[in-house]
Length: 291
Image 1 (cartoon, helix red, strand yellow):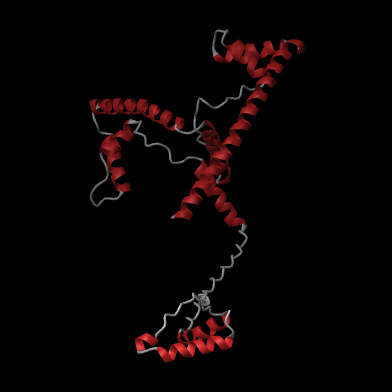
Image 2 (cartoon, one colour):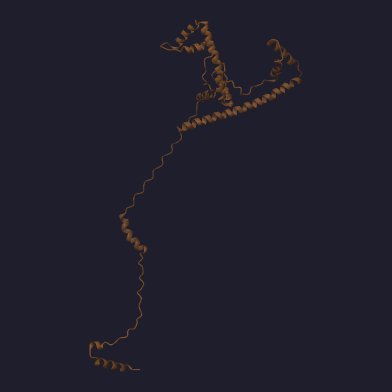
C-alpha cells in the first residue's frame, strides 16, 4: 500500500504530465451518499387562545340582539262571591223550576165543544177587541140553526177523539218518571199558588194505588151484586162488618203487600225523575257556556 507521502508524489507527477485540460480531468468515482430525508412538516394548529383572539374582532362587530321581553301573564279575574238569595228569590226560583217540571205547555189540541168550534171558525178581526168580538159571537151563536149546531157538534166530537190520540202520543213521548214528577210539581204549584183544582196528567204506565183492605173487599164484592149503587154499597158495608178478623186479615195482608210494591215503584220513579231533570239542567248549562 502507498503511504500518504507516496500518494502525494504520484498525484503531482500525473498532474505535471497531463497535456491538456481534458486530459487533466481524471475520472472520479462517485460514491453514493446517504440521502437525508427532509423533516416531516408538522401541521399548524391553532390553540384555543389563538382562536379566541382571532374571532374576538368578529364578536365585537356582531352585536347581540336584545332578548325579547316576556309577556306578563294576564292577571286572573277574581271570582266574585255570589250574594245569598233572599227568601223571596228562593221562592221565585222554586216556582220557576216547578213550572218547568210540571210540563204546563202540553200539545196543541183541537176545540172539543160546539161553542169552541164556532169561535175557532170565526176569529176576531178588524178594529174590535177580543172581548167585543166574543160578545158578538155569543149573540150570534144563540141564533144559529139546528142544522148548523149539529154540524158544530159533530166536528167537536171528531176533535175530541183526535185529541185523545194527541194526548196519548204526547204523554208517551216522555219517560214515565217525567210524567210522575210532573204531577208532583203540579200538586205543589197548586198548593203554593192557592189553586183549588189540580190538573194531573193521566198516564196508564204509572202505578195506581189500590187502597186499603176495605177498598179491596168492596171491589171484589161490588161487581157481583145487583141493584142500585146505593143499595149495593150498603149491603157490602154490612157484609164487611160481619166478617171475622181472620176473614178480614187476608184483605189486609193483600193491601199491605200491594201498598209496599206501589210505594217502591213510586220511589224509583221519583229518583229517576230527579236524575232526568238534573241531566237536563247540566245540558242547558253546558249549552249556555259554549254559546
